[in-house]
Image (cartoon, rainbow, N blue to C red; front, side, top):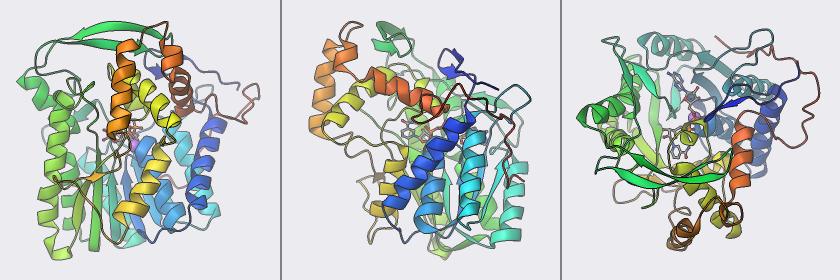
Length: 395
Ligand code: NAD
Ligand code: NA
């Protein structure tokens, strides 16, 4: 079929297999070009199909020749209807890994459930024995709690009164003011249940009970802090409470890993265009200004550059540097004073008329379509492509 982008709001309903394949190949080439990292050998990535999780899987495999198991929740294709992009990403990642002689298998299902944890544990036991790294990179708006069956929804709300600021519709380029009503305690609780650390802890408990963690085992979950411009809706909002909880969970997990001399980390990553971040109000305007400033200063990174740096210069460096709260920081360039000052200056001037030159709206837009395999360089979008792609090592 010939596949074109069809967008609805913050999402794209279609995805292009060839574009997704090219994205995976480009990421593999980047990691390979940076040389070998003396890193992990047997890795489980939870949320492995897109964004930071996919980049973590690629960096493990192609930076350190690691065997990888990926867990994700993606929609398979049906005749005439393309799969979700993470499906294609995983299919082509596995194809490339197998070509390189690397073990790679995947599990598609709800990572929050007991069933998927059990299936993953069984696969590790059967194929890998013990693993030495777990990356936790889930981003989900909902979670069905595995014990009660209750469904929780996360929300993106401020907590200190009504928050009014500018935002941009990145499809039309229109900058407008929005006001977001503050959340209440129930909103906080729901968001913490979905995006906090409980499930990360459940995963490590399940893996530890099954005795599949190797001595010196590490686990990393991803967090975000960001600027003063976005803190009301992000770090000081409902999602920020979930990130506080995730960061606190790293310490609880580390305590449980003592006998193994294991360690749980949170890595704070930079703001990037992903399916998850496109849905957060105000963030797209911030990102389009941030991209402009960071590109001009030669500091811009995508997911793969971030994760390659995380592995080579933090996690598997001689010493793993952390901040005063024990967190790894690869958002250091985003948070540089000169970068933040410039973004704050541009923020005041950004209007529908000025944003195309002040900000990198085009870069935002391209990155957004790239997530779905569109606007990827070298792809002929008039070509008939097979949407019925299988993931070779899908369990
Ligand atoms: P993403 O949307 O690209 O990836 C989410 C992954 O989770 C996908 O692999 C998806 O299949 C999987 N997933 C979602 N629900 C699932 C479920 N129920 N069961 C199994 N898999 C499921 O998101 P991302 O932006 O890469 O986010 C990953 C983490 O990084 C999040 O914790 C996010 O907060 C954090 N982070 C993101 C940014 C950013 O700017 N995008 C910055 C810093 C940190
Ligand atoms: Na991810």
